[in-house]
Image (cartoon, rainbow, N blue to C red; front, side, top):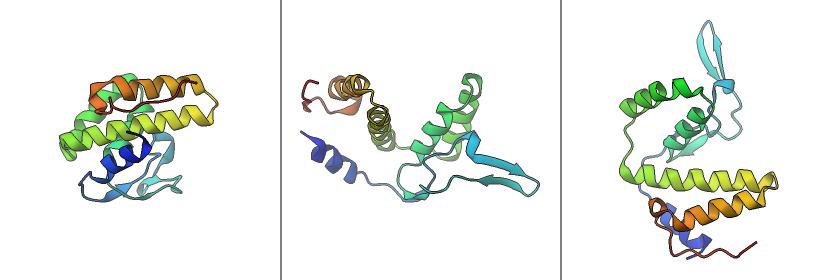
Length: 131
């Protein structure tokens, strides 16, 4: 299996489209008298992985704030098992891309190896060339 196989698996994901802000972090929410305003909207779209937004937000919260955030998110929008699986794969691919653009090719390789070996991703049949 190669990249095309990953894309095919993600395309088979059946979920309702929802508002998505892939950079939903505390730094991108401004409190005003009228309420909260979300900024940095160049990547806002309609997507099928709102849980990816939650992952990004949690990554930027203080450790002690994370359990309360997750509790509220899961209560308001319980994800399916498949949504969790596809989100984990999307998050890992995002992390690989982040390492790639910063020149951390060793980190990319390590995460690709994790994709290949961790049963959570179901991609044990992938093969990646050595660096």
